[in-house]
Length: 376
Ligand SMILES: Cc1ncc(COP(=O)(O)O)c(C=O)c1O
Image (cartoon, rainbow, N blue to C red):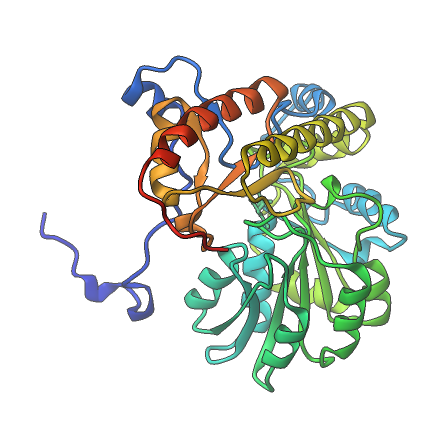
């Protein structure tokens, strides 16, 4: 077979690489012969999936028919939580798909999308795919610089992304500052508030509903992948004005949400015990890690999510590689726009302890090496 010429590919995509999820548990087993690696790299729920969701999925009688694509039951149930109607809710194959739908529905080539730097990588990647200009505004002390982002808005801006809590830093925006920012944003700009980790934040954080009620071009994104432990079924949802929802629905693929996902999520929403246990585990792990980082003299951003961004005294890739050899899988900040930091998911107490033990051993070694300047 002749090789397929690269000229086939759209010019803008020739420098693109597929998403790299980080090293898998299987790979660490194979490479280092470690039977039980500790995976703290994808911000998953360390307690597994909502038991109610798993039970509901086992009860599915048939998969031969197409789902009712309006998913009215689950939309009504989600809308009710925010005092909205089902016409305010859009469902996606993970919230990733909903990010992409904002570009499909609203962005022409040459339009702008404003976002923080660093933030969730998909915002920039989708901008590139759709031929939009990604305007990246540096974080200030790890936090969204809302003043800077507002100043970056131009007449060509269609989308503004605020990731709250922010991936990869874990930091949150202050609700009052966010509300003020939203008021000042031009009416023709869609404010996309990505709240994939909102359930781990305390009640004081914004849920975006008040903003939406005042400003219809607002879309809040949530996911079942994190608190409900359902990353593998792919389910995300958003709430916005009925117009925004209808426009996004007009470009989405039919049947994008599979029945197992809808059935699982409907059950998970009522699994108060699992949700409470997940939050309690996260709070305990957060406190333990923050205390340990303080003891070890490592800077960490205050986190409102289920992961932390911690500074290390060596190149992030080096720290990542040496932890990997010990069976601890984290994310290197080098690939996330946070050099000399690691992004570490909060695990079970045993996993957190294993991570700290490995880190402490390595720190002694790293600190004995010639000093490297601190970058924040
Ligand atoms: C900020 C943020 N938004 C969205 C997502 C995607 O979630 P989903 O699994 O629903 O596509 C992630 C996943 O890690 C994330 O970190």
